[in-house]
Image (cartoon, rainbow, N blue to C red; front, side):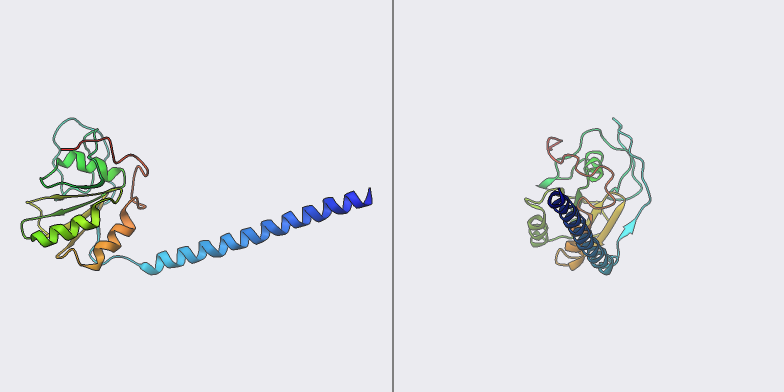
Length: 186
């Protein structure tokens, strides 16, 4: 009986010790991840636009930003699983993709063919991203996530990769994990 009790006590002590060690490792890892995230700091030039509405509508929407960063939108999202569109896409479908956590990269006529190819390379095969021309946008290249936007002059700007890393399925995403396939493919 004493031997069985020793085994039970030893096992319980071992489990408690293992739990404490695992908890300590988790706490240290979480602190390191938080520190590395906060050290990254803000990305220069990123603008945020509050909390846009998210109603599904069947009508065209007039958006206050160009390209739009969110708001009422079509009930059908735009395929955004590394898609490269060669023609402008409907705003209302693109905004729905932003709601799913996609980053939409757009460019105007000032972007050279080499710029477009470099942007396409950043998007192709990368989930929750898509690229399209946007002739009326004020910047040469614009990166847009839900309620968040960055304008740059070159696809080689290091902020492009930083924006993608932070905002693809980022904390601003209203519907993380929602599909980026099976939508509109204009």
